[in-house]
Length: 250
Image (cartoon, rainbow, N blue to C red; front, side, top):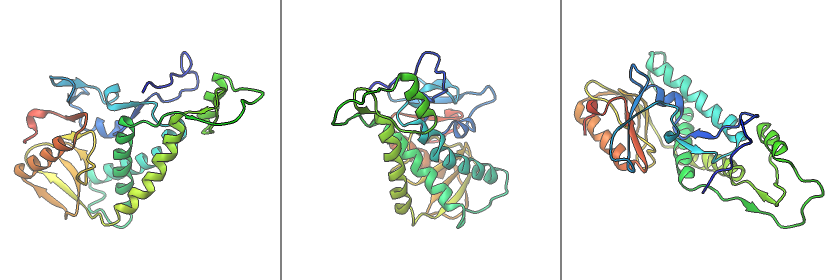
């Protein structure tokens, strides 16, 4: 499914390349040159990519209301928690931290699903209105988080996706009620990050730190890191990345 391109020059700053796993999270895996190691099922070689590369992104799959609204809030809350874990201000995922992790884990996986299963435009019944919105007016409305109908009586699928993801987030959050997140730190070896972890409850934070559901805080061996990395490879649909694959046991 092709995406709807904004006007030339994108005057309203609409987000076209939408990260499924946030830029800030990918950036923690960057080497000193600012690149991560990337491997795709479609590319037969390892690439070096910047965290903002389009290969990490969906193409305008959900609307700007979702991107700048509830998604940003979930991401910001998680990034603050991740930084607090890494610098030692948070040592345990407790009552207040758990929903932050749950919503982030759910958002990541649902966005990945929607990237591969985008919602089609919806055709409404009825007559066209007397005055139709111009392309510029449509983009202005989207920028201000207001839905609209095109002159051909279609609702953009990305608007429907924004609502769909929001609804599924609440469902997923309920399903994650039994999660008990432990902080795992590697003493030898680094973690691989897949494009999704829907089959196993794991949330990557840095090359040597991740959250694992139904686990206590632990410092883990190279063998345990390899076990998690195998889960990552199996869980991946499109790609995996790491700071340096040569440091990641399997």
